[in-house]
Image 1 (cartoon, one colour):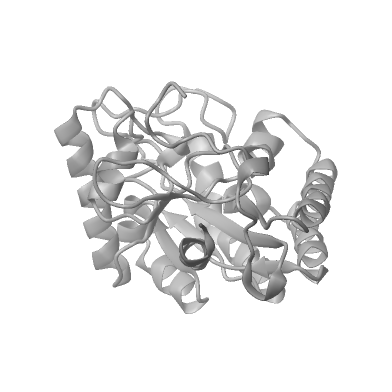
Image 2 (image 1 turned 30 degrees about the horizontal axis):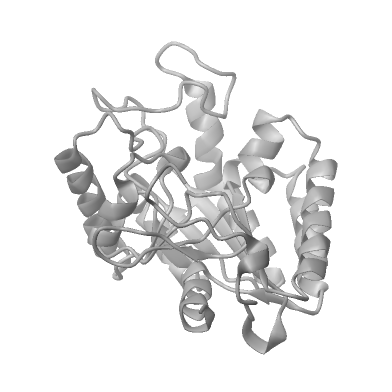
Length: 295
């Protein structure tokens, strides 16, 4: 390994992992609620190729901003309905500006039984290695405290805006009391990260099934995307006979909440949850079980 964040542990050398009641797959659905700023703060970093709209345009980029805002106004309710219909409690990755500017969404998500985890300040204010350590530490502390004030609970998990981190981020998250992080996309089981202080578990998202990666960046047909999710679950159930597997789906309401896509999501979720051996859980529930079960 050429970095210090975790030891390399191949799947075939691990002690078999067992999920509750003999489940072969733990399924977690993360729904991102991300605020795109009208005019980001000076010095902020965001992906210039950010999804939504028609690509980079001069200020004000109405198409991309309003395309993404659709998720907060319309799409989130369709996605939450689809999850509730099959008994999935979502994990909502909510950024600080959403929590502060859309208190209705905070209350609505909590009322649906969702877990809310921290998601940075906004999608237009990513963590990068350009930040000084003190600046990043303050950024993380501001997010955690702001989310605690907005939701009434300290967030236990973290997903960086656009998966953004610096080389220091895992250690700073653990230092701040964050219990799990979803930015690392390299496994089909949770695993412990190595940090200078504090415990931190990685809950890996399946990047190939991330909706932006599949539907926007790779321009995949929604029919094919839905088929990939089903095929992935079927194979994970097979592999999970020997050791439990994890499937973390990452969804954005402005994308999958569109009226021509939501039906495919509903059908896919029905297929996935109809299988015996699938445990649907929030990020915190999975991490708690893993801490007790892993050897």
